[in-house]
Length: 243
Ligand code: MN3
Image (tube, rainbow, N blue to C red; front, side, top):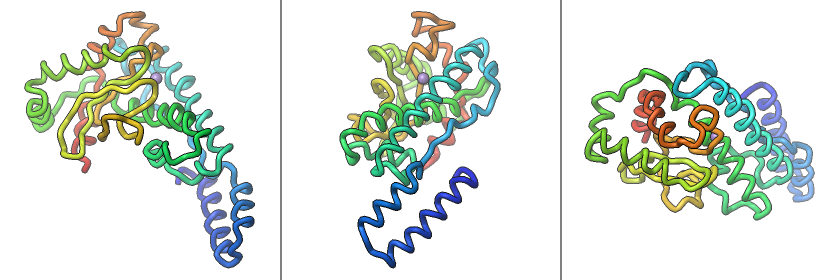
C-alpha cells in the first residue's frame, strides 16, 4: 500500500467485498470492478540518488532521460493496460510478470513489455552505486559458481554483448541456489513465466541503446566494462542472501 489514496481504494474495495458477500451477485461484482478501474496503479519510484551520482561511468543526462522518460513511459503504459482489463486489477507487479500466460491474450504483450520494463528498471536503479566492493562471502560465491572473479566478469560482459538488439543480461540464483548468467530480449526477465531460464535476479544490466548511447555510442563493450564501477555489491549480496 503505497499511500493514503491506495489505502482508501483498498478499504473501499474491502468493504465493497463484504457487501458482495451479502449480495452474492456476479453482475454486482462486475459493477464493483467498473467503480474501481484503477484499483492497481503503479508509480515511478524515486531514483534515490542524484542523476550525476554515477559519473563519469554513467552520465547524468542518460540517467535523467532513462529514469524520467523511459521508465516513466513503462509505468504509464502499464497503468493504461490495467485500466482497460479487470483481470489485471489488484495484482502486485511481481504477480503480474510471473503470470503473463494467465491473462487475456489482449493484455499479455502490455504486461510483458511495460510490466517487465517497470520491474527491470526499478531493480536496475537499486543496483547502481559507485565505490562498493564484494564482501569475502560474495567473492566466495562468485568463485564457487564461475571459477574466479575475473572469469565471472569476462563471462558476464560476453553475455551483455551477445544480446542481439535490445535486452538485458542477468545473474540469477536458480531454485537450487546456483548462480547462472542468462540474457533476455526486450523487457523480459527471468522471473517471468515465459522465460526459458528462470531464477531470481541478483545482477542485471540494461543493454538497450538508451542506457548507454549518449556516452558510449555504439561501444556496448565499453559500457559493460564500466558497469563494474557502478555495480552496488552491497545490494547484490542482499539479494543473494534472500531465500
Ligand atoms: Mn532501459
